[in-house]
Amino acid sequence: MDIAIIVIYTVALLIIFLYSLAQLNLLFNYLKSRKLDDNSPTFDLSKEEETPYVTIQLPVYNELYVMERLLDNIALLEYPKDKLEIQVLDDSTDESVNTTATHIKQLQNTGLDIKHICREDRTGFKAGALKEGLKIAKGEFIAIFDADFLPGKKWLLQTIPYFKNDKIGVVQTRWGHINRDYSMLTKIQAFALDFHFTMEQVGRNYKDHFINFNGTAGVWRKKCIEDAGNWQGDTLTEDLDLSYRAQLKKWKFKYLEEVETPAELPVVISAARSQQFRWNKGAAENFQKLYWKMLKDKTVSIKTKFHSFFHLLNSSMFLLV
Image (cartoon, rainbow, N blue to C red; front, side, top):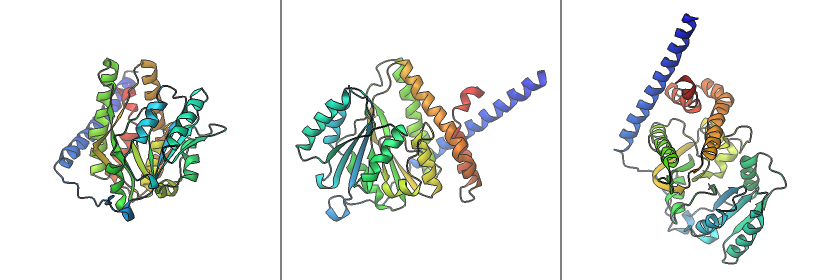
């Protein structure tokens, strides 16, 4: 028994040490990235011929108290109206369906191309809704926002230009927190998310390691989604799943730390626990689904495989500690 305990303890310490080295490497990458100028090619959106068609998808489910704020905020985005489509992918089962429909009609009267799409069943949940909307999306690029996100007016003008590089499949922005100081719980969540959205996302992206679309506040190239196998609902984190499948198909991701997209953090412990459960279990599911395929891919560097191991099994650190 003593030997077994020592072996388990030693293995746990070793893996935690390797995880710490991975995080230290990301810190070095982050600091190096700060010294570089971004010379990425960009579209000139002042020219009509360089302005692509964009579809905004808003997947929602029983968001009665934030729907009006969400729709009004999205309507303020600056982009040519003749090249912008908005899809409200509404899987709601409460009274918000009717109030949302009424608000959408009001926005349609202003000339906004906005559609209310309701499914008969919620097969695939969010992934299913996004996939359903994609079938009829007019846009070459698909921007996605969850109900509690409030992008700034110039958000599309700050993100869409980077797709001039035809290898870019995703542009992801940094989350902000409009209720960071509400309580100790929100402060802790904000700290943890800021760590991910600065050091981890930047550190991985700087060296072309796999990063993830964070489920919202980002833009996909429609062709990239289709090439990677489209949205799939067999894990709790469909965003991470599609991100890895896209990068295994050699699509590049562009992370914009300087573009902040504000959102609300969960203010009660039950909601925070539910969110953390979904993220941690979903990452582990994606490890089971995709890591062996990644491990066998000789075109993926050993260092990227190393970082992806800890990216997907991040939740195991709690168990090991």
